[in-house]
Image 1 (cartoon, rainbow, N blue to C red):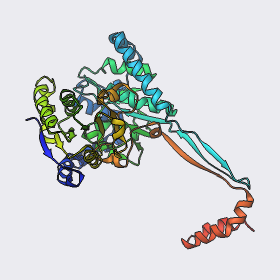
Image 2: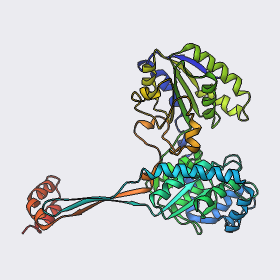
Image 3: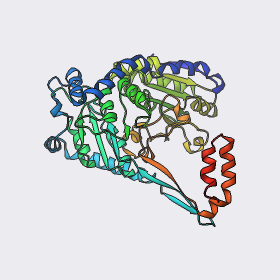
Image 4: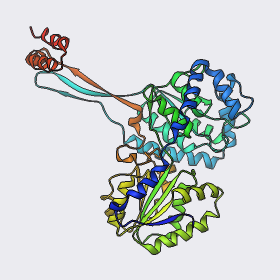
Length: 434
C-alpha cells in the first residue's frame, strides 16, 4: 500500500504521530559549513564567484558578463509563449493583485488634548530580491512563485525588485518565466541560483545591488543561506518541505482525495500528505485510489517515496476529533472536504491556508484564486502567517510631544529611567522640565 492507515481516536493520542512527522524538520545544519563557505566566497569575489558556481552546477559556459538577463532575451521569450498561456498568467496575476490589495495598511495618527501627536507610518522597503527555483535544470521554474512573491511587493509599493533564478544548461531562462516577469513589469533578472544567489542579494556584487528583503522558496541550500543571513536582511520565512492535511467525511470522493494527496506528494520526497477522517471505509478506498493513481504520474517515484515515508491516513472518532488532530499538525495547506465546511471552520485554529469544500482543491489557491501560496510549514502555522503585503513593509512609530506633555510627565519618566539605572535618560527629560 502507498501509505499507512493509522488509528488515532483524538488529539490526545497524537503524540506518537507528531514525533514521526517531526522527522521532516529541516536538516539544514548538515550543510551549514558548506553554505557559509559559499556566502564568504561570494562576498569576497562577487560576480566571478557567481559565474564559477553557475559553470559548475548549471551552465558550463556562463561568464560574469552574462549574469544579467538582457532586454532582447525577454522580448525573444515573449514570442515563444502562446497567447493562451499569456492570458492565463495575466488573469492569475489580476486575481493575486486583487486579493493582496485588500491587505494594504494605512498610516495612522492620533492627537491628544494637549496637542501631542502619536502615530504609525507604514512604508515599503526600497529593494526586494526574489528567488525563483529553476525546477529540473532550469526547465521547470516555479512561475507561480514569481507571481506570488512579486505582486505583494508591488502592492506594498516596493520600487525595485530583482529576480534571481538558475539558468538552463544553455545559459537561457525558461521563456514562460521571462514572459511572466514582463507581464509584471520586472526587468531586473539574474541567471544565478542556490545559496550563492542569496549571498549576492544580501551583500551585493558588481552587477547585483544588495536588497532589503528576500522572498521565495528554494532547496536546502537556499533555505540554509536564508537562515544563516537572517538579520542581515529581512527574510520572508524559513520554510520546510510542502505539506497538506485533509479533513474529510463520508460526503467526500475517495478519487478526489487521493488526487489531492498526490498533488503534494509529487513535490518532494520529504513532502507530507495526511488525510484525517472518521470513516474507515473512506480511508480504505482512498488507499486503493492512491495505489491506482500513483502509477499514472510522471513523478511517481517522488510521490511514492513521499507517501511511503511521510504520508498517512488517520482514522479518528469524529469530525470534531479530526479538527483537534488538524490543530496539532498545524498544516501548511488544509482542505475541509466535508459536507458543511463552514460549520467546521470554527474548530480550526492552526493552518497556513484553508480550502473549503469538495470543489476547492489546493491547486486552486496555489495557482489562481488569489491568496498567497507561500505558507508556514512544519507546524509553524501555530504562530506564522502567509507571505503578504506586510512582508515588504515596515512600520515606524511617530511621537510629537508638546512641551506641556513632557513637563507634566518628566518626573514619572525620570523615575522609570532611574529604576533601570539609566541616569542620563532621566536627566535628558528633566532638563526640559526646568
